[in-house]
Amino acid sequence: MNPAELARACADAMWREDAASQGLGMELVAVAPGTATLAMTVTDQMVNGHGTCHGGFLFTLADSAFAFVCNGYDVRTVAQHCSITFVSPAKLGDRLIAQAQERQRAGRSGIYDVSVQREDGAVIAEFRGHSRTIGGPVIASD
Image (cartoon, one colour):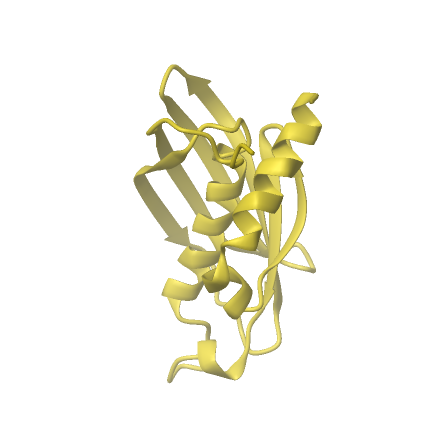
């Protein structure tokens, strides 16, 4: 399997078991070695008393994109540290795109950046995640 096929197979295996992301209406848009893109539309249940999307939903979208990109090598990987900076509000009906990009991967650790934007390109949040491999394959062997 080439690296692009491996990343896709890992994403497909993870997606089948990811009821949380699916339940929030996330969509796995694209995945390739070192990159992953997810999308989500802000619904009534995600909006707070200020009429903007709760930060936790933005974090969850970014964290999900992070998970798909860092698990694309068929080695189970978890978050070691994550941080997010909220730049501008997302509102009801906004379609959000989370683009995850690998910055550095060496040994058991990796660093990944995720930009969450509206479809018009406005930046909503910037996320940085540090990963740690824990061993074992993502794709179940037969």
